[in-house]
Image 1: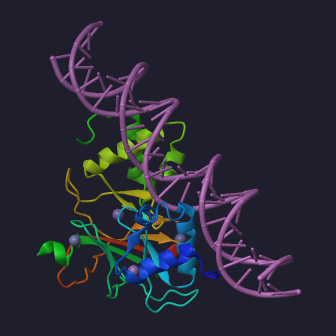
Image 2 (image 1 turned 180 degrees about the horizontal axis):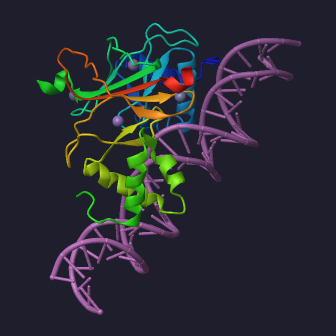
Image 3 (image 1 turned 90 degrees about the horizontal axis):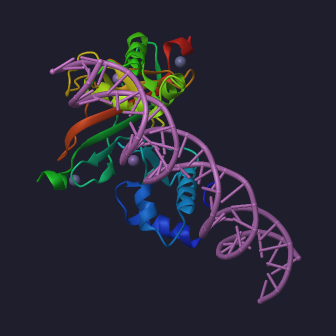
Amino acid sequence: MGIVRNTKSVSLVTDFFRQMDGAVGVVELVEKFKGQMNKSTIYRILDRLEDEGRVHSFLGGNGLKHYAKCHNCTSGHHSDIHPHFQCTSCGKVECVSCEIAIPELPNKRIQQVQLFLTGTCEGCSS
Amino acid sequence: MGIVRNTKSVSLVTDFFRQMDGAVGVVELVEKFKGQMNKSTIYRILDRLEDEGRVHSFLGGNGLKHYAKCHNCTSGHHSDIHPHFQCTSCGKVECVSCEIAIPELPNKRIQQVQLFLTGTCEGCSS
DNA sequence: TTTATTTTTGCAACTCAGTCGCAATAAAAC
DNA sequence: GTTTTATTGCGACTGAGTTGCAAAAATAAA
Ligand SMILES: [Mn+2]
Ligand SMILES: [Mn+2]
Ligand SMILES: [Zn+2]
Ligand SMILES: [Zn+2]
């Protein structure tokens, strides 16, 4: 499991994430790489990159799948759990490096937390 | 805007929410009311009930639309913003009545917060 | 470097949630 | 009861995501 072969498509995607700082929706990636690789290929490469711990995925405010690169994750284990933010003005989606305050719920065992924030980013509020 | 006519389908849906305490996915509602009303009708009724402030919607962990009844909302304004929780064991989805701790982000104006929790519910952990 | 093995890709067809236009129907108003 | 207007059913559609399979590419073996 994970990336085994270094294909042209894999390079294109990993190069993209190398210079991309924020998060990106798969829909945008499909559009970006239209003509260079097939839609299914993108989904499959992202799947493998996620298995490898090189990117992580989450659902944006619209419920669509997004990806961003990992920082300290390993193959099979994702350790970077954080909120995600989308600017309503410019549409940019990004990872937010801060802890999520997990609410204490009586008689409930919380295992997973997904926090999605919407608002105005630095560039758009000035 | 909002519910104007008291049709049979509207009654069925509102009756359902009257006795339903948790949240429910639209997919389940479509299944539940199959034979009694059309899929489009369900989506449209839920839309109107939400406009009226009688139910609110959110996306579940799978990105699918869910609804739950409101408590102190009015037509056009939803004031009950809270996390939602899904039990991985029984699948039940519910509203969580607690405040969401909004993280302070430098140079960002947070307008909307969506918090989705996954774990084990009271019934399933005992 | 040639050949064999195994992974990856393209393609086309598919699934499934959600939406839409429009004619038929039902609720409320008159 | 008749008119007006909102609602519904239906079927077709959209768009994200998935899948099976044969062709192509990458790696391993010879
Ligand atoms: Mn992230
Ligand atoms: Mn709720
Ligand atoms: Zn912005
Ligand atoms: Zn449970």
